[in-house]
Amino acid sequence: MKFGIVVNTERREALVLAKELTGWLDRHKAGYVLESLSAEKLGIGPSAKIDDLNRLCDVFISLGGDGTLLFTSHYSETKPVIGINVGHLGFLTEFSQAEMFPAVEKVLGGTYSIHNRSQLEAVTTIDGREQRLRALNDVVIEKGTYPRIPTFVIRLDGELLGSYRADGIIIATSTGSTAYSMSAGGPIIAPKSCVFVITPICPHMLTVRPIVISDEKIIEVSVDAQTGEFPLNCDGRITKMLLPQETVKVKKSDTLINLVANESRDYCEILRTKLLWGREHNSGQ
Image (cartoon, rainbow, N blue to C red; front, side):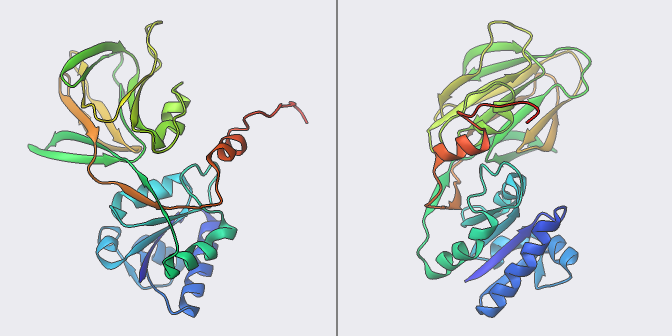
């Protein structure tokens, strides 16, 4: 078994942890390949470009926060990912730093379990060719630098849902419901729920609210504007600038993300500890 290691090189704690991890793997005669930028920062190897890790490795290890895990998931495809939290919130990263070595031992011993997470697939045209872009958290279309408030036209399975005057539209999975969608006022959805949520960003209409729909629906979004370009983001990465009236089709991807599960982790406890649910806040203390 060979591990592909991806490190958030902007975090000193992640770099220190990566050196500890590679030393541990060396002592246990376990193979690994570092993502090339991570290897360069650490000054150790072996290494390979992120695009090649899936071909070379059986399991991925992400050392960073949720953003690092999202980045890793784009290249892991269906291969398992061990998420080690070296960030702040850590909704997606299943394991703490102290739990890293026991998690890797379980994978080496074949005694681990998997959380399957659904992804979104955005179908659009780039340079004249149809492109399918995947996102674990969300697909977002924003107004960008457009000086006015555009109208986002949304259809579900070809039927008009509505026209939203807003700063943008977020289409999120249940996994992504605790990310940008939550910040924009969307609901928290338990993982593995077979739904998507459509959340408008700063809508200029009092009656507009987020809507939860079946993940079997096909969502079509276009921007009704005279001019301008509108950023299409997949998990926070701008993938294309949309033109007025150009349609993006969003649906459930056939490819699942497989996260190595922390069986001692409780979702309700995560909500209490990460979002401080049920706690009283005393300012200034």
